[in-house]
Length: 95
Image (cartoon, rainbow, N blue to C red):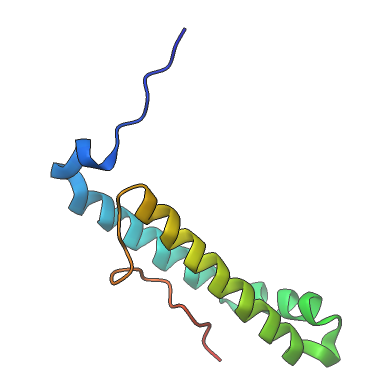
């Protein structure tokens, strides 16, 4: 049985603000969860190669974070949602 294709953003323009609101909440939640100490510290240790190299891990993690945010924003733009000015995920990790 063939599936119906998902609607494009242009087709749901009247719900655009609702879509942005959902993305706002999702971005805020994902960023908050990702920066909790119990979630970020193990990643810093792994990325750095050990507890004594956490600072190096921070640099690598920050690089990956920026890349992920840029790619996320690009994919949304391709889909017709430009969130460059509205995105709740900062481009840089807090220090």
